[in-house]
Amino acid sequence: MAVSCSDRLRRKFRAARNVVVCTGAGMSAESGVPTYRGSEGIWKKFRPEQLASFDAFLSSPDLVWEWYRHRREIISSIEPNAGHIALAEMERSIEHVVIVTQNIDNLHRRAGSTRIHELHGNIERNYCIECGEFVTAQDVASSSAVPRCRHCGGLIRPDVVWFGEQLPEAAWTGAIEAVSTAEILLSVGTSGVVYPAASIPDIARRAGAYTVEINIEPTELSGSFNEVIRGTAGEALPMLLQVRTHSDQEK
Ligand code: BV8
Ligand code: ZN
Image 1: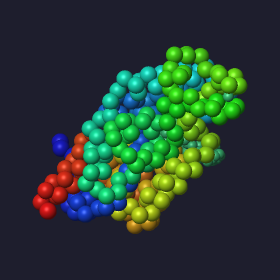
Image 2: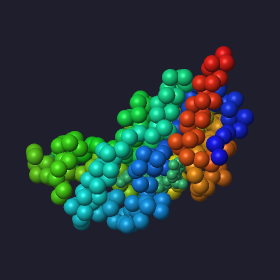
Image 3: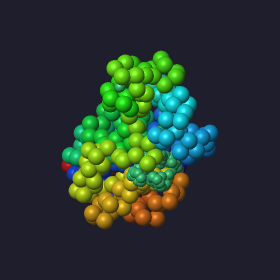
Image 4: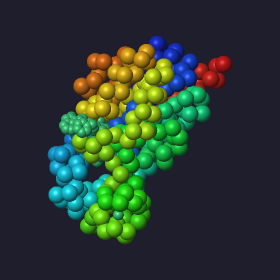
């Protein structure tokens, strides 16, 4: 069944100048990246605190490194999907499209989006926990055991935000600034369980944005959105792009 939206959203989306799109793991599911909590979710094999925390990294660096190396391998073999591409396309016809993503897979950038706030970091970047020296994914791709810094011998970690760690200041303030002027907020493919990222749609609604959840199933936050579109990112976002570009042709 083709995915659709309300006439109200159609009208709003045609006229909007500031749109913020919050994305979670469901955004990349159609590219082949396993989500965290789906049936095949990576967390299924491990509990989050077992792997995505600094303590876990210090106590079992090779296990945590191997998990990220495995995920980097998956990500390097896949492409952005129709949803990522539609979001990048939207930048051509909507003045201000800002992506606020919890994803660490770099797919929005690869699809061509230019205004992206990565709340939880990026798996392509790594740094030494002692001296902070950054190394690229290529520099460390081969090592299956946790790599050591060539300057000081410290452990190299992925530049992602682990549980109990603060979000990058610039990404968080950038996201909050973007939602303060957003006319529409789309929340795409997130279960809304991880904070403070999950608080963004509510902040946007209180600032006056029309908020829309795009998801294949209900979430803990569904009741707090102005509208829910039941469908995949790869179907709903091209549909919304069509609503926008179709109207531009009518002008
Ligand atoms: C923080 C990077 C301040 C790493 C991630 C106790 C102590 C300390 C903190 C806490 C605590 N209790 C609670 C907290 C806060 C904690 C938190 O929220 N915990 C949760 C579990 C309750 N948050 C933090 O720790 C954050 N930092 O609070 O700092 C602080 C500091 C010290 C002390 C106190 C506070 C940092 C959180 C960041 C964690 N890092 N990722 C890595 O990826 O390896 S989290 C990771 O999981 C993701 O980044 C993302 O955020 C989250 C996954 O969620 P989703 O993206 O939503 O994915 P999920 O699989 O859950 O859902 C997919 C959805 O898509 C589903 O709804 C599905 O239906 C849908 N879907 C599937 N296919 C499709 C689809 N939708 C559309 N189309 C499809 N095709
Ligand atoms: Zn170092």
